[in-house]
Length: 398
Image 1 (tube, rainbow, N blue to C red):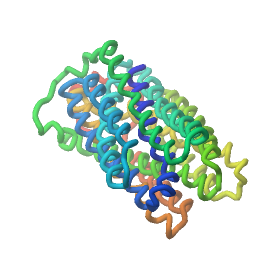
Image 2: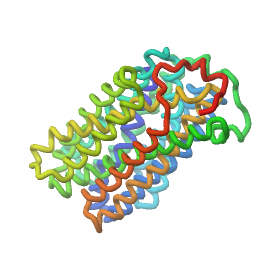
Image 3: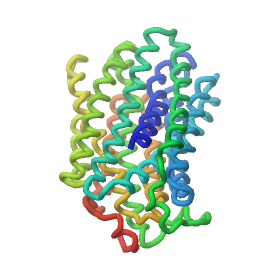
């Protein structure tokens, strides 16, 4: 649990750093919001392939080994981002960073899902998911401190260099974390295993879950990628003020992750998803368009972070409970990362349409579309709360 929590926290730290330095790059490098959106999208797009491949490899090599490789990979390329000199160099470093970013979740979520009893799987995997808000909060805190103490042209590079820190976690994992026995059942081989979840009897489940995750990921990235830019350019907050406001939203996200973890075991995975999706639509509209002062949006930001990030807590256990062990890694890796890859288009679209619609309207449009897609997909999926993993070892139709 500590290994997966740490890996996911540091994953979030490395990936979320970019959202904070977008205003700096707009100013120093003179890139457009469209180009900033591309830099956000390329990481997410490549992460889709990274997660899919890592999921398949975790079925073959084991969850723990692939977890270690993924952490080393994203830490290295986050560090290298700090040395880039132009858009093209940063584009390629961000793309390669994404490959490890996708792989970490695919291996870690399956690992946690397999070592926890059916009764507590939702809250356990959901608690690990809170690591995202911890890493995001660490990025906001580091951004705020470095912005106050270093010149703008230097602070963003130091942020990326700090991204090498997760590499140290690998040595701890190597010493203390063992491979779960269940993941060795039915060890697959061959390139064709990559497509196992895209064949009957899993195909129908796979495309529905991918559709649900696309909506969740796309809406979340559309909202959070440009939120620092929105606060700084539309709300006219300082860099320190932007970081402080986001810390409140991230605190809400942390509480939302915790609540989602327990709710998914109490009321079910699907009900938790629905509460989060519907609540996110309402609070997103209030945050972006209600005639509120900067002081008033502070508590609204807490509630928005709370309800929006709640939806990610049940995702790991929900997908773990849909596939047998022989295809669990590749199935879960494909669904989560196909959703992430398609959802990766959303930040780029927000960036390009912001010039025509305004930043707030562009964010709202794609956040709403993503959440609507998520709700439609959920209506076609089963509830899995309390499902035994042993019952999945004989493949059945979706």
